[in-house]
Length: 229
Ligand SMILES: Nc1ncnc2c1ncn2[C@@H]1O[C@H](COP(=O)(O)OP(=O)(O)OP(=O)(O)O)[C@@H](O)[C@H]1O
Image (cartoon, rainbow, N blue to C red; front, side, top):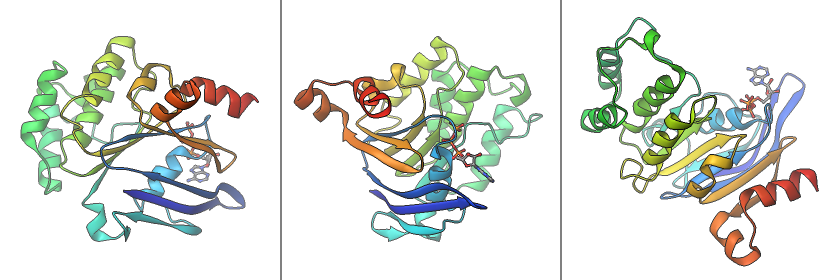
């Protein structure tokens, strides 16, 4: 389980996160929802230890983040980090050299699933295909937790459908996934848990199935209630 406790983060004088707490379980997809600039990316970066925090704690399977816990988590940013002149094959080779837990079999499976050619250069990829390669780079690392920043942002419906399919496949298996988004519609049915963020705090945390069964509300219903009132 990933536990975020009372996370506070300031950039200069600006407090972006003001005591954010939530948990994300293995085997579940947890979605951090909030409008642009609410602090979703900052929260993921804090979990990865990529940005220092001012207060609070982050535990991964009960352990404060350290060298060992980094081996358990992969971060898929919203933009590709591979060099544009690299081919997909070279990018995969780079990942293999860099990560002990790189799983080439899984990478090849994803490449076939997405119908992409390993000879293509990163610079030649469309926005949708860039998102798919980004996803591949993260999912092909054998880790227990995957953090994805806006995996569906700005891509066409068919690419979205393919990515959605990956979410429900054995490629995710029993891993714990945290995704951020500000547009929920297409992925609502995939999500187990929702964290609604605003003004640096968690407005509401709920289990989607429980909410549907007990209160008959969809994620969008709850968002409307919480954000609009
Ligand atoms: N390195 C930084 N220095 C200064 N301010 C920053 C830095 N990174 C983020 N911020 C500010 O912190 C706030 C939260 O940013 P963050 O990227 O976490 O938001 P977000 O919810 O992920 O937004 P988006 O949906 O646009 O990606 C924003 O106001 C942003 O301008």
